Length: 229
Image (cartoon, rainbow, N blue to C red):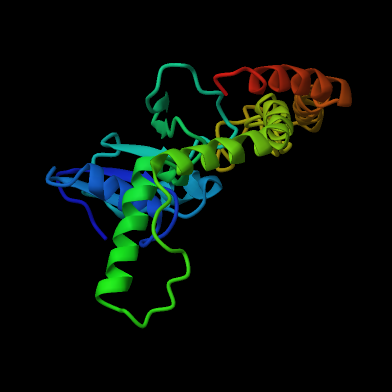
């Protein structure tokens, strides 16, 4: 897939993923935009570097990255995509969460029921017709409340991981990249730089403690127990 004189969006997933399908729907009719599925979010950096290097006719500044927020950024009350540089994160935890809409589910359910009954009367459709928007809304709310404590724990862990974002692995060089040499190749100078890297790594990892987890958990439990949640 190549892009010529246009803009392009890197997203998670594969060609048939929900991410790509959703962006296609949103951008329907807008010319000059190409969507490029890039696998998992941890593959973005290497995938994009390789892709851009292989496309010499592309303006390297003319792209954005769209992906699930997951637990990487706490959303605010302002509903909208969360921007982090070239990254645009979903406001909800993931793309699939946008399908958790009672009206949408009701509409889909009724249509499936009609199709099965009218066009395929022998079909083994065992779900019956939709119970209605109100009932579906109650189910969604009940499911959310049942998941609240589990989600509080996950947010607590996610908050800890944010503290070491970008430093969760010890670096093996102190230059701008693995292909660049340091200003000094003397052993003692290199040993000092390595010591600094180790100190930085340990400082990041030392922020992950059971006490910090419990502090986070109390905060998220209180938040999820609020009526609006």
